[in-house]
Image (cartoon, rainbow, N blue to C red):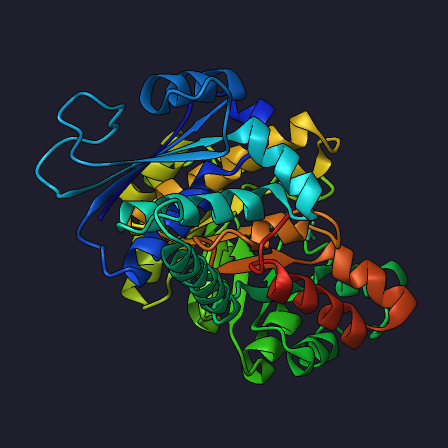
Length: 400
Ligand code: PXP
């Protein structure tokens, strides 16, 4: 299946996740039994749309969507050529989609999806301008595809892995036994978390060796041990055998993990650690910045997962800058997924920033700690986890 999604507008300005739309286009091709076809989707502004509408339909105004069945023979603006049978190209005006989204009370991505479906149904041969009967048929088919797409997403939500480091941070502030991250982990699991994450730091500032050993015995879901590539910690991981390890950079002075792992710069050490874990059947995830080269290096180093660092996205002020960070996460997640890596994401995610990331269906698991443990102070841990799960669960029902 080939889906080529081209935006002729700067993505940071459009606020559109190309990865999300591409993934929806792929699902739609599958739902229409056209998985073996190529589809082009081009996002343009109103000015360019007006040109298309004038040149091909003799209507001198912009419109929301146009569909050009392929192969075009070079006459029409086909974006894909090659051996694969071509379904055609769908041209969508983001400007019009944005206006319609406001009018219809829909999110921009929801509107773009509705328009993509409309274009696709045209490419499948239906036309609402030929007869009323065909218009009704077309409307019914579009509605059915929208529902199927929603059901697909509902059935597949990202997992939530809760990082309980900060329960241990509070305990260590007093140097006594409470609160216990091991008990906290049990509550998170009962509330629906699919995994527990702890970072055993070399300075043991929060999680202690005892915690990791007890968690190994008590965690019923999956235990993900975050760690640096330090020899002592590697030995502990090999002895404890968590369900997976996530390699992170570690600096003594930092409050929390700051940047992603430089897989390219530390290639030998990372590869050696992956090899030792692989020999012990422990899958390895590499915590990396949203950077294509680091992702390629992770694949080459033999990682099973990458965890994409969401810190910059979460820290960016809402608006253009955050949209830009989001787009780069979405593109990197898509790229990693296409490279055969399993994709997690985390760092800094909270009750506002999680929805968009959880909506990316290339992402398998979110690792969230500070926001959940902070909220637990006010509403209790079980409710804090459930509230986050609700956000994740609904994120794929057309995210904003
Ligand atoms: N992922 C990694 C690799 C981390 O180092 C951390 C912080 O410990 C997290 C996720 C969770 O970040 P936060 O506590 O900000 O949710």
